[in-house]
Image (cartoon, rainbow, N blue to C red; front, side, top):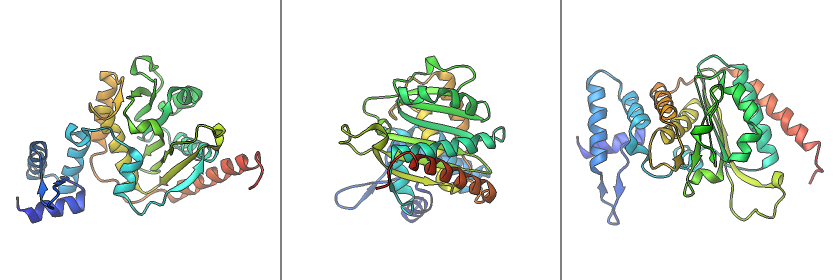
Length: 283
């Protein structure tokens, strides 16, 4: 392959990602070379290039060899997303609205991932997430202190987070669905130990753009399926389910969404946020 073709692939597909040396030269690892060869083989077998790249990114452990940050990944890949500083109280409303709408389209092939920072946050929502798991093609909950060994048969697959995982500071709900893709991800800046819990502030991104949601789903599912990503305590069966879900989402997302469903989501957000505002004084 020519250098120009490699640069075109990187610009259009974010693959392969070269390492830039101090002098500006671009270098690729042996793992990158192997990944490119697999993509070429898929393309030669008749798969479209974008689908071949997506399949490689979803399934190759070389794409997730370091602890991952969902917030940083979306910020880098989708710079048009505007971060908002929101309190935990507002984030709860956003999360509940997304979860409600995920339940409203249950049974239609959605894939759901939740990041809870710590196990106690998941446990307070466990009953709700058991309901969510029953209506999705795959459902996963991640948080420090969680373990795949304690997952219930009717609930989501569970996984823990290592001490070094950036996800310990992140909150997310990712719902990849053909009619209503939704993603909310938020990063908690340090230095808030003295704040009341619901007044903690998070740098927040959210979107219903199919391509953004697909990126978020691939990253989180890939982290569950691969070692070295900052995710731990994943049962072998859960890792297999995450790998299968990632493969199911290997193709680019359809560009259209159900506008009526998006309107319902927005209305739910307004309702939850208004309910929160009525229980605290205005600034």
